[in-house]
Length: 293
Ligand SMILES: [Zn+2]
Ligand SMILES: [Zn+2]
Image 1 (cartoon, rainbow, N blue to C red):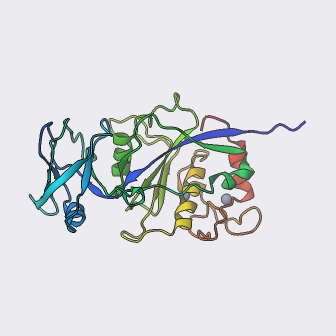
Image 2: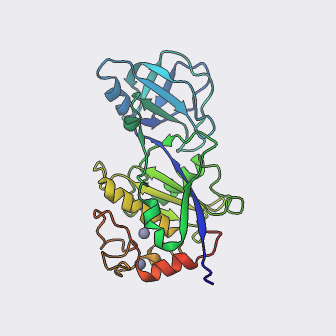
C-alpha cells in the first residue's frame, strides 16, 4: 500500500482594469462629473472623438452602469483632472483611503480593458507535487484596478481594500489570491504573502495567502507572456513556504530533471523555456506540506 499527501488549492484570480484612474475626491450620487488623480488616460481615450464609456466602482459597488464621457478637462495640480459624464452617477463613491474608488475606461474590447495573469500551464507545473489547483468561481464582481505598487504597505493596503476574504484564514483553508498588477517598485515581478508569512500592518488584521504577479518590468515594459507565466507559478509555490521569509525559499539548485535551474531560483532560471520545474528538495517540501496552507 502507498499512502501519499494530496492537496487541493483554490485560487481566486481577478481581472484588473488596465486603463483609468483612482478617484481624487469622494463623489456623491447625481453628480455629473468625477475628479480623478490622473486625467491622462481619459484625454488619450477621447482624443479620437468617438464614444468612450467609463465605469465608476469601488470595493463595495463593483458593477455600476456604463456612463459615456462628455468631455475631459485638466483640473487641479497635474496630472489631476475632471471627467464630465453624459448622465449622473446613481450612487456615491467614497475614497476610504488612497486606494479607494476607481474610474475604469471601457473600449468594448475585453483584452484591451483587462489584464489577467497567464495560468494556462498551472496543472503541469504541479504534476509532480500532488497538488491540484482549482480556480474558484467568484460570488462578487472580479473587477479591480490594475495599479502600480510603489511599496509593500501600498500593496497590502490595496489587498485590504479590494479583497473581502483576505484575512479569514480559518474560514478559507487552502484558498489563495492570485492578483495581476502593473509594476512593483519593491523587488521585481512578483510578491507573495503566504499563510506562513502573515504580515500585520498597524491596525490591520494579518494579510494572508496573497500572490501578486506584475506585468511590467521595468515600468512601461510589458513582460513576455512566458515570463509572466513563470512568475505566476513561482509566486504560487511561495504559498508553500514552510515558515521562512520570501527570500529563504529561493535556491540555486537544478530542477529535478536537470532541464534548467529550479523554479525557485529567483535570478538564475530560464523564464522563457516554458518549463517551470522544481528541484528535488522543493518537490519534497511541497508534497510534505499538510493541508491548511
Ligand atoms: Zn520568490
Ligand atoms: Zn528548488
